[in-house]
Length: 428
Image: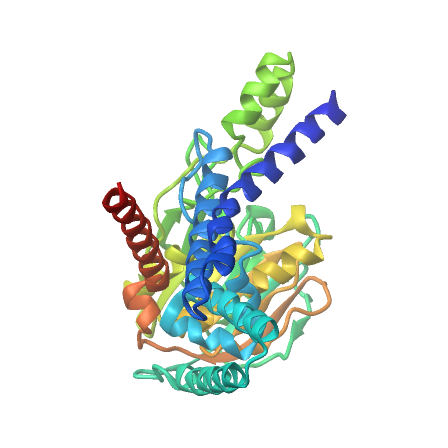
């Protein structure tokens, strides 16, 4: 039964992730029916962008459940995220993730057309386009600059796989005696549990300055398990709390497709075990917190997938973005770590904000507003890492307007379809 379930799951996921991309077929066919250089490429790139968007939506619908969220969250494998590891990633400040995907397809098309047509004029056009992209990347790197920047002292905790027994002599990498403005803890770190109160006082509360804050995520105090993000002062008093909105299917809730399968195959005990040990309940949209020195946009774990989540809190005024994660289930997945780093780099560069992640079961890291590492994810080990960073409150075009290339691609394809329908009617 387990083998059958795995096969069905793999086949279903493959279809859900593949079928939306079949809409690029008309774009591919246009290379045969059109001699124009530009039109087939623009059509293919537009359809590709719409395909990536549709794939993300379809995936969220396929894995929807009682505590699920339908939306554009599942973008792993996007061409745009792949380009975040290149200088072209800075264009995301103007054109977002889907704009980068559009650029990737257009670059591929331009080289294909050059190979197919072997025209010297096209070679010059390609060189000009690449030169233009280099200039745009430089402009994007400079944009929007820092309108208001405050240098802050911070520390972040990374914890080993599982739940470590904290000790007061825990190592502190790059130790600084300066009191901290911000200390970020991983999701479910258990630092503020009663058994760890001496540790919490010594290495968190006592290390904060008078206006300093700490960020942590626990199960909350309600009867139901919510991923509750709490912001506390140096006395450990709760200043603000918010529940986690975006939950991970099969990790924090079960999709309807699985609950139906287990129910009708007589495996309801799996549902009972999951509901008892792992079920998390959906919370509310993340909000910024305004401290005396800076405005923080804190998000719990799976929220790192939400481009619109981080864009939203940046529009609310966040000057630094954080993520408190529990990645125990992904502890041995190098591909997930790489893709999550791509997503973090996108949040940082596209919104021009420093990004800090504290992790349980994975290395912590921090980036400045240019997406450059303040410290890189390194070897595992339970430890604090001290560092300084500078806030930023200026907003990019992407932050203000969102995924404009997705909107224009939709409009372009609609116009193409309407034009073809009108032409057919006129030919009758």
